[in-house]
Image (cartoon, rainbow, N blue to C red):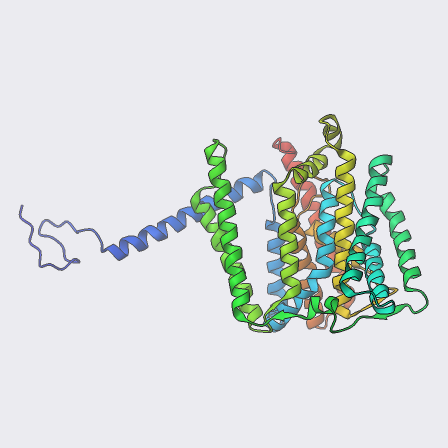
Amino acid sequence: MRKVMDGSPGEHTASGVEPAPPQRERLVSRAVGGGMRAVRSAGTVVSRKVSAGELGSLPVVLVLAIVWITFQSLNENFLSPRNLSNLSVDIVGTGLIAVGIVFVLLLGELDLSVGSISGLAAAVFAVLNVNNGVPEWLALLVGVLTGTVAGIVQGYSIARTRVPAFVVTLAGLLTWNGLMLAVLGDSGTVNLDEEGLVAKLTSYYFTQDAVAYGLAAVATAVVFLVDDRGRRRRRAVGMPHRSLRAVMVRTGGTAVIALGTAYLLNRFQGLPLALLIFLVVVAGLDVLLRRTHYGRQVYALGGSIEAARRASLGVVRVQTAVLAVSGTMAAVGGLFLASRITSVSQSSGSGVLLVNAIAAAVIGGTSLFGGRGTTWSAVLGMLVIQSIASGMAITDTPPALQFVITGGVLFAAVIIDALSRRSQEAHGRA
């Protein structure tokens, strides 16, 4: 039958058969269909992991969303660029200490001395630089090395004597705190130079919009390249791997978060130097843990230290190195905390600092049983804790309630961790 057409692409033919839709509609249809399939695939993967007890960062992300929505509904300034910019700087000092705690928790141990080490390192720096005129860069280096040496002493003692880490580090808590008081002497408080290097760590901002947007774009590109490279390598050897769609979805999510953060920060004062350093350190230590032989040894010891000994792993060396990392990060965190208030006093490293650092690592998803967690856990956990503190302050809520809420979140995180481990054991994954 001869077709009768007037040249219009949308008209029906004489046979009653409608031609294919225009090219644009086909492209849109394919894009939507591909997106829906990627979302369904991601949903299936998430459902399977949840049922197997592999919750990952899902619970803490949900908690963070609830906290933000709640405080934003109570005060519309909570998610303002100014408050979020201050929040991004406030998490750095304690967050760096929490990153070191993650290393120790991966071994199934606990370091109770990080607060005292952070105070000691800050005191050493302040006394050397301010009271004795030592160049700031040299005093800074000595302060950080103080934390490293303290960590090595504790780590070697734990590895050689096999005394539980919490006992050794409890003794360290008292020892390093006493040394801090001795270093500060009768003055008790040392004020830092507000124009000095350390003070600038938390007061300097990159005010050019291009810096934040450029770094966000670089971070997104790195995530894509790393994920795609891992996907190709695993596919080449026949191992389970992410699909290209899953990689694109992950990259898209990273782009939204990174560019959205850059936009908000640029609406206030720009990208804080402290936040940039924090994220670079976290990313670098994440590579150390997940992409190096040393990192695999840390996870192996956390899974079973006796199995690691039988496999002839360097248990003493790894345990010593882990506590050295914890001590170093405590020292660096202490310097950032001193930078935030431009002073060091006898109360440095005390109060709720230790509790917040440990809580941040656990709330973020690092297991108390060892062998599971990443450095990014500390970032998420610290965001939750500091968001609660910021929300309490901006809504004039009694400070006592902050401890109750933070304690409740920590308790819930521990329960989820225990249930998750039980589910993994049931599925033969623990």
